[in-house]
Image (cartoon, rainbow, N blue to C red):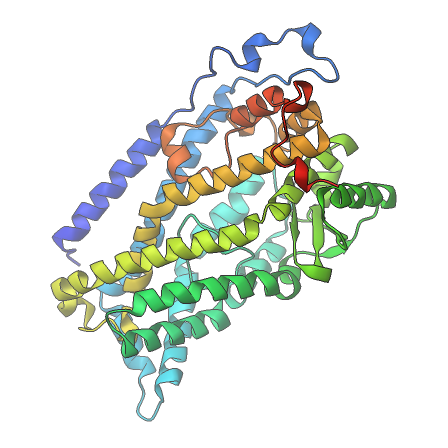
Length: 451
């Protein structure tokens, strides 16, 4: 099979990306960082926390992780490209278009076949990144059967998060089918403005998904229950009350049966607020550190970050769909003989749309991630002002890492632009060590929110 010249340029771009990520090095510690200021005498209960130097193993894992990320992006572009340039997408359309089938049925048959084949094509990558690599690094104790079961569920049910950076995939067979029906309805009714209508639709879609996800989809992948430590639960609820969160319930997730990954979050509205913490987080942190981390998660909720996130992501999707509309006609005109379709509203164009959406989201990822890092920084500020426990928060940030061989304290520019949805560990520790406005009588940015 001979790829067109444009595809050769794409492959060259991906190769250069792999090279750039492989050479992307973490930043050196700044001269005035806590790492250079600290001595053994300063390691007091309220003193600053040292920013650790990266180990050689951590740097190697950082660089190999960049390479794996780049290859993953390439893979999720290559798969839909193969469907297109081989004409296989058009063959699936022909199979789906049996005589007498209504168009919604044709679309349903196409979505099932396309997603199933894509799932099979992605399975080796999913196995490596989701099962083999975490076990190699010693951060997962999930059995192969549980991993495979969860992976199959992800084909039917939506993923537990729709946040990017890309690649983006259809959110499960059911929602994927409904989304495809709506997409092609917009394409057929308004070929010039479909991208605008679809982008505007993303706002209510993401809002509704964020509401139904906790009750419908999360329990398919994780086991929720009440917090076992009732005394700790009371302290978490008291902290929530001080943060302005009333009427919440605390849930403990049994994450340890699958992974050593830590996590916590606050979600819901009105009388359905949920404060969720993984049992791995409880086991890894002391009570002081756990409350500091929970204050951070409460900060996201009180500051309205979930709503702002939905609004911002909707704008990102709107821009991406606009870029797809601008590019799609060019691709079809140049390669319609290979694609075997001449209109974007042909169901066989679905791989082209996914391909161009992923390319567009990659281009927009730096803006998306910069916004995410800003949110995290403000949640850090909220946690420090609420608890005034700088050292507790800083030590919690270090403790929830999987060990000094798993992270570097400063990111390189390429990692920051395309992968980092949080500030680096070094930047967080610097802020936690230095931010103490209450000691100098300065006003708190979020003090008016506390009770």
